[in-house]
Amino acid sequence: MQELSRTQPILDWDTRAELLDKLDALLRDNQDTLAQSISSDFGYRSTSETQFAELFPSFTGITHAKKNGKSWMKTRRVAISALYLPAHNEIQPQPLGLIGIMVPWNYPLYLAIGPMIDALTAGNRIMIKMSEAAPKFAQAFAEAIAQYFSSDMVSVVLGEVDIATEFSKLPFDHLLYTGSTEVGKKVMAAAAPNLTPVTLELGGKSPVIVLDDANLESAVNRVMMGKTINAGQTCIAPDYVLIQRPLHQRFIELAKEWMQAHYPDIANNEDYSYIINQQQFDRVQGYVESLPADSVHKTTDVDANIETRLMPPVIVTEPALDSDVMQNEIFAPVLPLMHYDTLDDAIDFINDRPRPLALYVFGNDDRSIEQIRTHTVSGGVCINEVIIHVAQHDLPFGGVGHSGMGSYHGKAGFERLSHMKPVFVQSKLNGLNLFLPPYDKLFKRAMGMFLK
Ligand code: NAD
Image 1: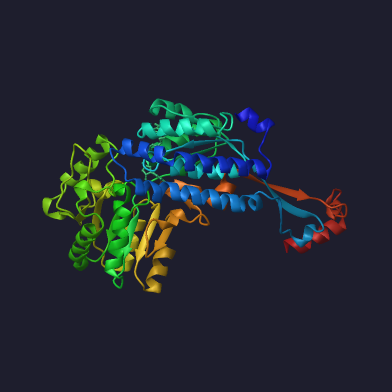
Image 2: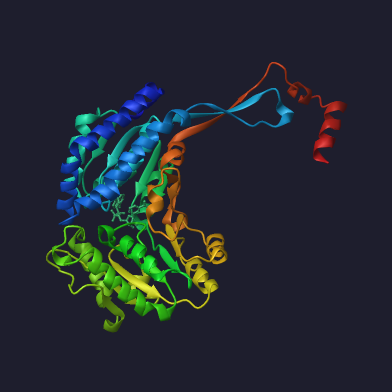
């Protein structure tokens, strides 16, 4: 595939648009089978969630790329210093070649399709390693890809962690990995001997700050949406909430009312998804069971079910900072409420920890919001909202520090997976011959002027 990417690079827009059309057709024709296979992997995954959080952003991402890709790929003139006129500068986007994509299990469809859209729009060939934790979807996806794409354009690799490890060692022209921070370190180390550039889309704890003047009902509404979709197994799910202690009780009451309104009878609710596997279920149950019982607040009447891996949301109030829930990304429907005294304390709390993938602020005071935006560094931010920034194809998506490296989606993804080649075009008329040795008086006068 890599050899082909050198001898037959995909340079024209029509071929790239055709490939995007194939991706669109693949999804339209196979959406039910794909959603069903994700549901089997999870024990149960709500089809509505798969439609809303995986298929919808995939289709809109393809539409956005088809609308804009032709202009993104154009060679364009950029500014030049008057000193070099009448030469000119250009940037010429070029396909990198062969892109490796590594996919996690939590949104296995969108986290394969999203990077594919960017890679195809940029004229690349693709190899994808699917997650071993979502094997039924991986199989269904591989079969669908084989029907719509030639294997020298897109090929899907299945297999366990040993295959993933070997995959990460391949000499791709770029490797886009989505998954945990710990495995991300291994992937980057595996890519280093080939000098394969990496984009790492990682995880971590994404905090919410609720300001004193926030509309609490709407904050609870959005935070609970973010914590319940896919049963909290979302990289940009709100991980914990910084909110003044006197509001904790009201937050919990509102969360219970919210659950009753949006997930009545959670034990038999087709809109609520389950935890992917026993290992993840045990991990999170272990976190909760290690906390003092009076700090754990159920939001429904139903207990977590070890057989089915149904885990209704729970809120935990002020867990110790060294507890598992505050030391690890939770990645499940467990929501700690933490107290802060002053806004500076809340900002320090965030800055004392690894840089988050997302940061959410609820409130109306523009100065406080600006203070948070300016004094924290996170992959992305939503004001009075959670999660929805990921669906903005005009915004780059990615982490910073321990939450990731490099961003993609839309134009940012196109540029990430292209070589944005700088080209200097000299004019017949140019003054650079004045700057040749022997360096005479004119040269010295000119340098004297510039270096003064
Ligand atoms: P994971 O790190 O276990 O697995 C991700 C991928 O890495 C899989 O394809 C797997 O096959 C591969 N892999 C596993 N072990 C490997 C190894 N030793 N060497 C090379 N590859 C290996 O992650 P996961 O559990 O599937 O996903 C959950 C994590 O992903 C969470 O931390 C979540 O926040 C993060 N995530 C991030 C984003 C984002 O866009 N930033 C999106 C979704 C999930």
